Image (cartoon, rainbow, N blue to C red; front, side):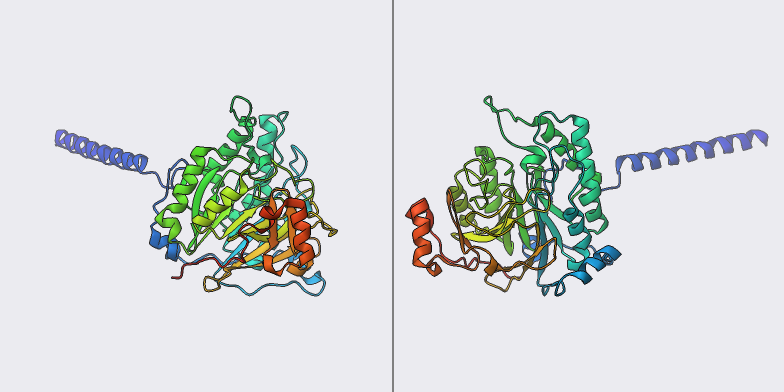
Length: 426
């Protein structure tokens, strides 16, 4: 009897051991979690891009509440703080958050803007670069890592806590793409550490990627039927192989069947600010790039770097120069206006031929900045930019003469109709 009990116990023990081993193998071979950071692309169909990516069945989290200090800012805004009518999609655009080289501190307007986001309840926050204060060869890896940690504390972590997707482009102070005489990146260390920060799954920006093969430098994503592209405009040159990727991505079914296309860059196409009105401070071959973007029906080019807010257009392309939240706002070319630190709410209406409406706030007073306050056009060195509500035909003779005397007729009149971009409907 004892012998039988021994054999029975031994058999049961073997069976139990096999079951445990199998369970462990399954757990180890099928880890939970999100797609690995080096995944090449998400499968987004043209239909999903047109209609918006599918939303999980579970209920959305409750909108974050305004802090007491944010409520106090709103209550004390002179004349009350405007909250524009919400449309199909709401974006908030910010840019140039950094302070002095190597700084891990942020100006108060940065924290103020992030704290006020629940007031607008955007679907997406976009940033035109310069999130940290690099582009200095003397910075050590520890200093660069500390800057990204500070950015996470002030900006990225609060956005994750608010469940806000964050679409961004890399700026020259984040990870400059400037190259040396041997075609090497002059700031390779900063690029490596920027990649390490963004490739960390803990720092996921929360967007629905389409192609993230070269994230965070060149990538595409989708938001509620809008196709977004971020390219590396942290210097004035985009290599030929990357321009080929840009064209291929924009020509794809998923891009062309989206309701609209928006591009994020750090450097603008055309100059708008004092101290930035020269080659190297704008994208090289701006007219050729604009023509390419128009060919693929890109609606808006959102940029930073010039530290000056200007809502403009040239040809068929809308040009939103986002201004600045960090240190060093600059005046507009030929303008006596004081420079502002701003944040812009972009409301997208797919049934509106103009598609977008901007509401831009002076972050110190929280008053809105109206188009009529801004110059009707800016004559930078590489081409005129018209305010977005002005057509070339509406310029007075003396305004046209001023532009043509400075730039020549070609840079003032070339292909400048008031834009009426095509949009897709559901």
